[in-house]
Length: 420
Image 1: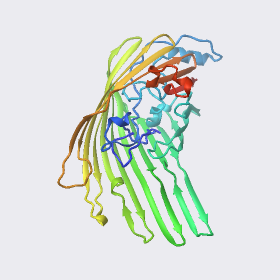
Image 2: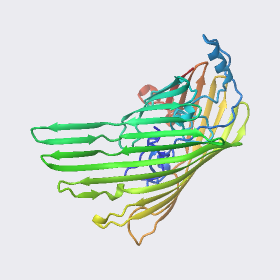
Image 3: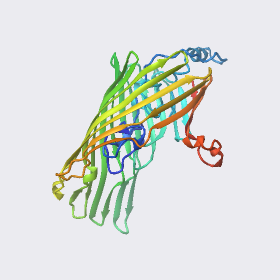
Image 4: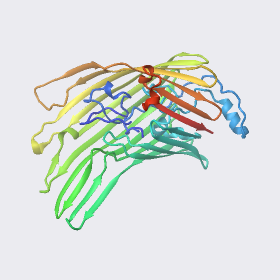
C-alpha cells in the first residue's frame, strides 16, 4: 500500500502504501517529526513523459503478438519496481506502487513482479475486457508490519484498488470470566480510485488505520477499552504540460487516542489526538533528453497545518503547528546497451516549522533546517524479451563489494519482472 504523509504523531510512520495512504517524503529523516506523519508514501503519480526511442531488440517468441509488443516498447516505458526512483521524482516511469495510487493505470498491464528484499509480489492480468491486479504486500502502518492483500481493477474509463490488512483476536476465559478483543498493530484498510478527465487524471483515497494496539477487556463485569486510530484521505490531479509533469493533492487526517477505565470514564491522549490538513504540489521538469538518456529535476513540496485537540477533562489547551517542506530532487537514466539501463537519483529537503506542539501559551518557536544530509541512489535494470531484473545498491557495497557473501544484503532493493 502506498501509504506517505504530512503530519506527525507520537511515533511517525513509514511505510509507505502503501501509503499508508498519505504521501510522505521518501527519506523520513529529511523531515522533522513535527510535520511528518504516517503512511504514505511518498508515492508519486505515473509519468506521461514522451517515450525515449531505444528499442528492445527483436527476439523469437512462440507468440507473434508477444513479439510485436516487445519490439514496440522502449527500454524506458515499462512498469518499474521498488528499486527505481526511491525519491519520488515526478515525471519518471511508473512503478508498481504507482499502480495502487493511480489504479486506472492497471488497464492493459500484464506482468509478474516479485521483490525478495521488500517481501512483496504483484501480478497484473486481463480480466474479461478489463484488467486486474493482485498484490501480496505489507501494511504501511508505522507501528506494525502485518501482511497486506491488494486487489485492483481497471478499465479505460476508471480504476480502483483495495488494500486490506487486518489482524484481530478474541479470547474468552470462562474460569476467570475474562473476555478480550485485541486489534494487532498495523490494521490498515484503504480504497483508491482514479479516472481520466481529459487534460489530467483525478485520483482519491480513503483509509482507516489502527496503530499501537487497540483492545477491550471485560473482566467479570469490569470493562476497559483502548483505541488508537486514524482516518485519512486525499484527492488530487496529476498530468503533464510539455516537459513539465505535475502532481497536486489535498490531504486530510484525523487521529484519536482514547481509553475508558473500569469506572466508565473516558480519557484522551493529547499527543495522538489532532486534525491535520496539508496541500502537496510536486513537479518534475525534463531538462535533458535524447534517444538514449534523460535527466529530470523535480521538487516535492507541501504545506501542512496540525491542530492539536483541546482536552477539557484535563484542562489541556490546544495548539497549532504549521510547516513547509521543499524537497528538490534529480533523476537521471541512460541506456547503456539495448538491454542495460542505469538510473541514479539525489535529493534533500529544506524544512520551515512554526510551533512544536508544547501547548504553552507564551512560547513561540520557528525552525529552519536542511535535512541531515543529501541522499543519493544508483541502480540498474537488465531487460530481455519478456523478463527484467532491477536492483538498487546498498551504500555499504561501495565500501565492501563482497559484503553480500557474509550474510549482509548487498542490495537496498532487488526485484524481477516477467512481462507478457
